[in-house]
Image 1 (cartoon, rainbow, N blue to C red):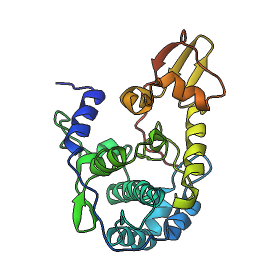
Image 2 (cartoon, rainbow, N blue to C red; image 1 turned 45 degrees about the vertical axis):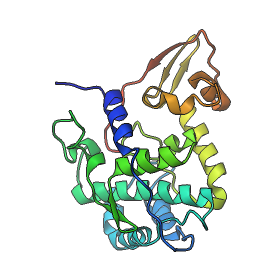
Image 3 (cartoon, rainbow, N blue to C red; image 1 turned 90 degrees about the vertical axis):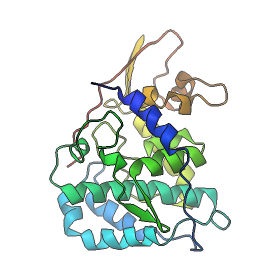
Image 4 (tube, rainbow, N blue to C red; image 1 turned 135 degrees about the horizontal axis):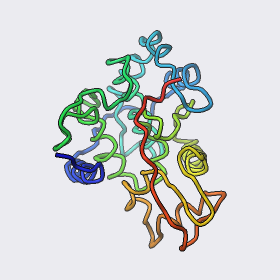
Length: 253
């Protein structure tokens, strides 16, 4: 029995609505360790040197431990500091998940099995401990980030280790630079011809704009309106839209 990714995504989003973000009394943290790793092992195309990360696992583990003990305090952290924390956490724990099973050809090879209820998938593995609570990647993306932060640009910052995902930025997200960083990643993704193809009267778009359609339709705007905010090649109401096949191959250098 086959169930579309869109239906699975709807089930995930519904099941994650009850997830609450953990809190601590920690002050906003430095993401310098993660920044160091990204600069060393992610190239300008956003591709990852997983073997290099594996050799530097001690530094990665040190950063993950910092995340585990420093959940955002909603009263003292700015909204941008909180969001930067969760984006970095999602990306760093995704790298850790790949390393735990490396070498793999695709993240979907991890925990592979029947996807009917999406239980046996890498996004449903509860291996992330933050603030004394255990989470999976779905919890962070759908139950915390999408639920608590009303910003569709996050889709171009969260990286699921696949070639059709956004490029992994080779610097850490930080509260004071977050808006600029999200703007840059959104522009880069929309105008990347490997992610979106604008062909005159037709366009072949990333599946993101299909899977997360509702996230982009805010303030009475359409997906086309959102794309046109950032696209060099604008699309009109007459433009015929199709969606590209998603490439789940590992985003490895």
